[in-house]
Image 1 (tube, rainbow, N blue to C red):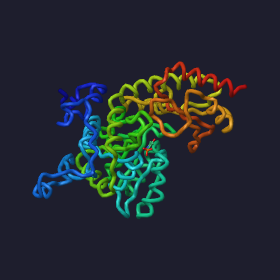
Image 2: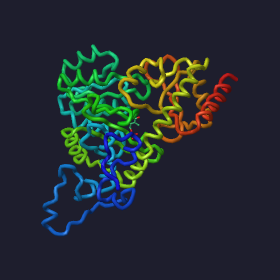
Image 3: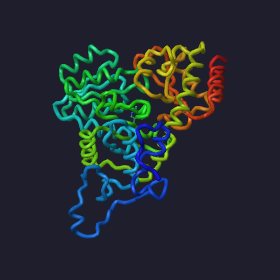
Image 4: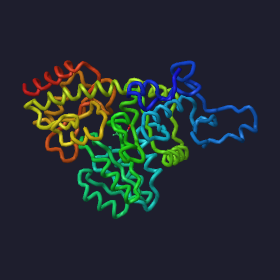
Length: 388
Ligand SMILES: *Cc1c(COP(=O)(O)O)cnc(C)c1O
């Protein structure tokens, strides 16, 4: 019989057990797929008595409020996020970002956005929030003095991302969160890179953790979803805003993400180990100008990563000595790495990137579950072609 996850259990036990205490999970290992827009009531009195906003939100009411498959996933995500009172699901990671920002901001407010934030987050702030009277200012996450000044000038919320998913600098989240909270700002973080297993954001000073479940939790490149996790006060408001916006996910997709969660710590650990080997190997190549991977000792973000994170993942980048065209030829020559957006799936991907401030053309790798030797051999043959 499965009970709630004990905090003392290890991450793999917690991932295997999370979200399985509900009555619907007593007879099958996985919750059944409840496909339902209409929920039925035995009589008019129970229909009138039903409240969609009951404390935990897990009540039969109407399809948009979810059903047991969604509740199992929300419960699992809550149990895997230390300090969380609940989780809200969104149809994509970006919808989770925009849902969180719309929850914390009002016209006339100022949002401080980290310079390394996910591009579509920046676009939403510039194109939508600005239009609704929110002032958006960007900051360098490594310049604490300038960040303090901006906070003192007034901010309703700040949005962090660490490490940046193109630039890979690690932010001192506890320090920036403390500065922002002292000025009364809500602290949001896009925690997609580390997930709650690698970076327990709510215990590091953040109010709301946003995760693109599309990446690691889904893990199999076949589903789009996002989540926000938060303490009681923000969770209530996040859920309210998601309801107002009409955000729903399909129970089939919720079941896919739930399946992904069961192996999440194993995949993350394997991909991290493999990425450390690949990144270390790349650092020794004469064709490589720079490796940006906080997992590597010697990386500028490594000390902070060791201090604040319980784990990492397979995503990092490196710069090639050469032209953008040579970089593209190198990526084209790879056989084991697919070329495509997204990351965190079981298969390895390579992406040509040109983050702001990069002195040389860069490649971002999402290291998957393949045998590391095969990935190294593939990179090696692509370097040989580059030299030829
Ligand atoms: C992919 C990604 C998102 C958005 O997730 P989608 O599910 O693709 O909308 C948000 N933040 C980061 C850091 C991402 O990499």
